Image (cartoon, rainbow, N blue to C red):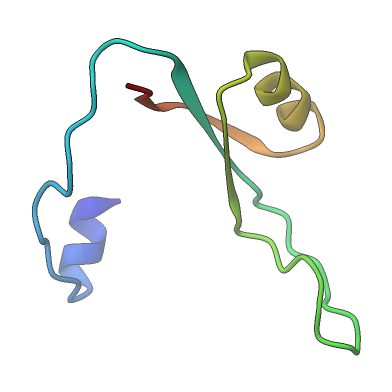
Length: 76
């Protein structure tokens, strides 16, 4: 993903921060589903990310159709 974005003209600004190698896992999930927005302009357009420290919630959200992306970082 990084290399593709750089080829498209995005600027690599380096590492933003480092996190602790110990601590609780923070899991990342991605919603690939695209929904039509209602006329009032609010709604789920898809493409969102969700983060959770709960492995049970992580698995539940995957079962709901989101894509699990594993551990994003660890808490301090």
